[in-house]
Image 1 (cartoon, rainbow, N blue to C red):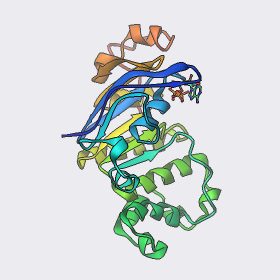
Image 2: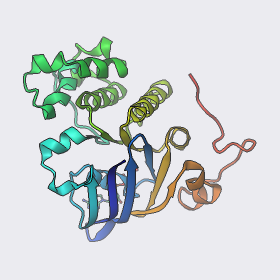
Image 3: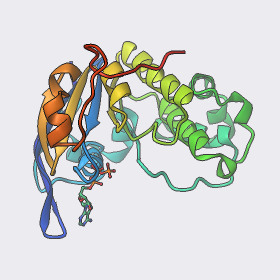
Image 4: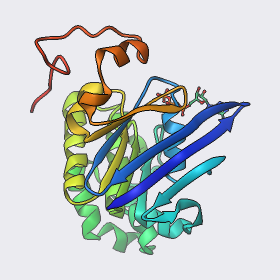
Length: 253
Ligand SMILES: Nc1ncnc2c1ncn2[C@@H]1O[C@H](COP(=O)(O)OP(=O)(O)OP(=O)(O)O)[C@@H](O)[C@H]1O
């Protein structure tokens, strides 16, 4: 089942094409990695996929319906978006902030929302139980990233879009978060993650969508998308191989 489908999406900003004819398909149960060098257009494309920015042309359907026609309240129950640089959170307790994830479901009573099982589950899954009474504004960058995921999980949407969610995480927490995304996909959700860590992208994503200069230049299984040629021409780095490994090392817990 297709959860999210973008076809030929374009956007101009500052007199130039920032995203050009980009397409992406997200199926139920899949993790798609959106990769590409700095300035490739990934965050801009993600904001359009999240329905936060209308494209100049092209079509984006969420659960079979034009995303621009979906009322914001319904869209918030269907899709959770974790932006790249979340604003500094207010000084409310972490549990209360994660509970805001229940707002799209009409749970406006803060105390009741904080007791919802989805909130407890999200706090446990992201390892935030020990921090849940702390003011959100006191959290470190990595802790904040986990809280942002917890809030998305508390909403319990079929689609999660995460823009560089592991950028601030240490290796163990980055691994845990990638495992968590896979688990969510295993439960039937669809996940799109912007990643610069190509080792983790290769290991955890079913498909990669590679952007460069605003365009999607390759998409498919990681082994088909990333090769020495692409690493040189798109990323400007030379790959030195260890044996016949696709990536030279893997982190394990
Ligand atoms: N409002 C704007 N006006 C002009 N140019 C913009 C605007 N917004 C984004 N851009 C440009 O569009 C390009 C794509 O930006 P975007 O943030 O989507 O890239 P990205 O692939 O997410 O990069 P990064 O990996 O560095 O986060 C960049 O060159 C950026 O400077």
